[in-house]
Image (cartoon, rainbow, N blue to C red; front, side, top):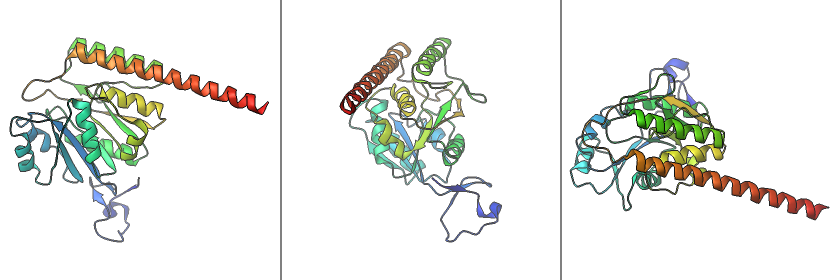
Amino acid sequence: MSSFLHPAVSGQEPSTAGQYRPISSHLAITPPVSVVIPAMNEAENLPYVFKTLPAWIHEVVLVDGNSTDNTVEVARELWPDVRVVKQTGKGKGDALITGFAACTGDIIVMVDADGSADGNEIVSYVSALVSGADFAKGSRFANGGGTDDMTPIRKLGNWALCTVVNRKFGARYTDLCYGYNAFWRHCLDKIDLDCTGFEVETLMNIRVVKAGLKVQEIPSHEYLRIHGASNLRAVRDGLRVLKVILKERSNRRSLRRAHAVALSSMRGEVS
């Protein structure tokens, strides 16, 4: 997890060429960065997605959800070295889990394929991680963030669910249901993702807190989907998110009870 200034700025000479990956005129990193893009019939949007991705990233992993258009062909034309992974299951969560497993980078960035995310923001996420964070969480409602794609009902729902998570799990999130995030690959061993739908972002946000990982919110601007219609359904997916929150809360209580029983048993043996 090392980071350092570009030698031209720091005054240091690199021992060997290619040891660092410049990401700006003032910062370079050694960890390779993988970008995961789950996509299904997003051929029209991919040009907007790929044109903002920084050239210094290590790899792009496109998870194709059995597209019936030329999503894969367009991706390969735009980014010749793209790694295409076929999704065998269904749902965004399943697609992301599939993509994560295919990544070879030390840092993983999640980017939606609808053109709503600005790849230029990746530098902010990566900077937070190499500066000490385990999980860099995008937020549309942190100071400097914003959204062009949320109805008042969705904003209210997101606020309510975010409030519940903060109170029940001791988090301090300003946003909950947002898919632009980045993290060190080792975090996957501690959060053990096991859901298939849009609720995957909420599950990740809860489990990084439960695992005691260091989280830093990154202000992010969400733009409108450029082409096509979203598969997101506010009520249906909101209920799925709520179900995940309640399940994780229930699991937390069960772990506390098991821990209390174990301590009591140990004290009994000692006495």
